[in-house]
Image (cartoon, rainbow, N blue to C red; front, side):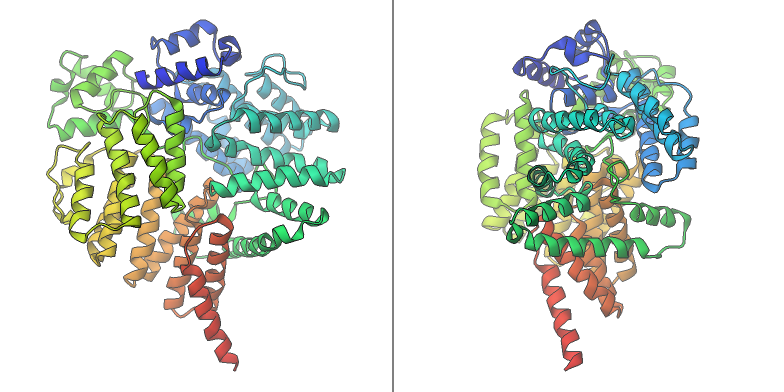
Length: 630
C-alpha cells in the first residue's frame, strides 16, 4: 500500500478521533490493523473499502491495482449482482455453490458476510424458507458485528456491506418495531456519519426505500416528506437514481398530502415520463446474438420497487488496473525481457508466475518492479496526489461542477484546489491542466490552432515514450499497449470532442473506436471502468449518428442505456435516449423518435442537466405532427 494512502488513512483516523479497536472490530485484530497502517502489510481492496466506509469516506477516490485473486473475486460479485437483478435464482445458486472457500488474499469476514447474505436470499427465493433466510442474514450481520441481537451500540461504525446485511435481516426478522428502530438508527447514522456524498448516495436511498412502508402504514406524512425529499435531492444532484421511482413517488404523494403540491408539479410529469421510458425499454426486442441478448436482459431488469433488486452499484466505481497487465504491458513497451526486468528483484520464474496471474508479488517486489518500469509504485492511488482526504473530496466536487457546466463556480473551486496541492507533481498538473482547459474553453474560448497542442502537452506529462502528433492516425500501435490512467483517457476524450468541433469527424471516430477497443483488450471488464467507458460510448453514439451510421449509433446508445440502469448512474441517460431518437427519426420511425425525444427531454430536466437539444428536437417533431392534423 502506498505512502499517500497510509497518510490519508492515518490523518483521517486522527481527525475523527476514531477508536482503532472499534474501527477494526469484526474485520481484523488491532495488531493487524496497526501493521497495515504502518505499511508492514498490504491491505486488500475489500478491507480498504470497509475501513474507509466505517470512517465515513469513499474508497472509490482511489484507483486500485488488483491482483488476479482480487479481480476474480470482484468479477464473481458482479456476476452475483447480475443474477439478483435478473431474478435468476438458479443461476445465482450455481455461482454461490461454485465458490467453496474464501480467498486468502481478501478479508475473510467480509467474504463470509457477503456469501451468507446471498445464501439467505436463495433460501427465501428458491425454497420459500423465510425463517431459514432470517438466520442466514443474522449470521451475515454477526460475521463483522459480533454479538448483534437487534440493536447497535451508539459507537458502532459500519460499512455499506454491513448496512446492506442489516437491511436484509430487518426485512425478514418479523418484529416491526425492532426493525423500525433499527431503520431509523441507520438512516440517521448514514446521513450524519457518511460525510462523503459519493458514499452516502450508495446506501441512503435504499435505507429510505426500505423504511417507507412502515411510515406509510402509520400515515407519517411529514417524516416521509423529509426523508424522501432528501433522498431524491441527494440522488439527483449526483445523477443517481436508486429505487428512484418509489422515492420520487413517495416525495410527490407526501408533498401533496401536506399541501405542498406546487413544489412537485414538475416532478410528477418527469416521473410519468420516466416510467413510460422504462416500460418501453423493457418491452423492446432489438437483438439477435447471445451477447446482445444478455445486454438486453440487463436493460430489462432495472428499477424494481424492491430496494434489494431495484438497482445496485458495483463494488469498484473507480478505474481498477490488473497488476499483471500493468507489469507486462509496460515491460513490452520498454523493450525489456523478463530476465532483464527481474534482475536484482526476483527470479525470472517468479516474475513469470506473477505475469501469468499465478502469484502476487510481495510489496517489496512490486515496488521494485514499478520503479524499474517507471510506473506508480502504490497499490492504491488517486488521480491527484494529496495527503489530506478533504482535497480528494474537493476534487470530486470540482468534477461535479464541471459535469453540470457551472463554469464560474468551477473556476473558483479549481483555484482553491490548486493553492492547496503540490504543483510539482505531474499528476496534479495534468488534472488541473485539463480542468483549466475546459473552463477556459467554455468561458473565453481557445483558438482552434492551440487546442490540440494544449491537450497533447497535458498527455505528455505522464506518457513520455511516444512523440504524439496532431494526426491521431499516426500514433504508433505500441501506444495502445499502454495501461492508461482515467485522467489520460479523459484528455483523449477531450481530443475527440475537439476533433468533432473542428469537423474532423473521421479522426474523432477513429480515436473513439481505438479507445473502445482498448477497454476490450484488458482482462478487466469494461464495466469496471464505468466512468471513462461511458464517456467513450457517449462520444461514439454522437459521432456515428452524425455520420449517418444509424444502426451503430443505436447499438452503442443501448449499450450506454444498459450500463446507466445497471449502475444507477444516469448522467448520460438523456443523451443516449436522444441519440436513439435521432437515429430512429433518420430511419423514418417518427412516432418512435417523438416519444424518445420527449423521454430524453424530461430525463435531462429531472436530472438537472443543461442540454436543450432533446427539447428542441421534441418541439420540432411535435409541430410536424400537429401540421399533419390541420
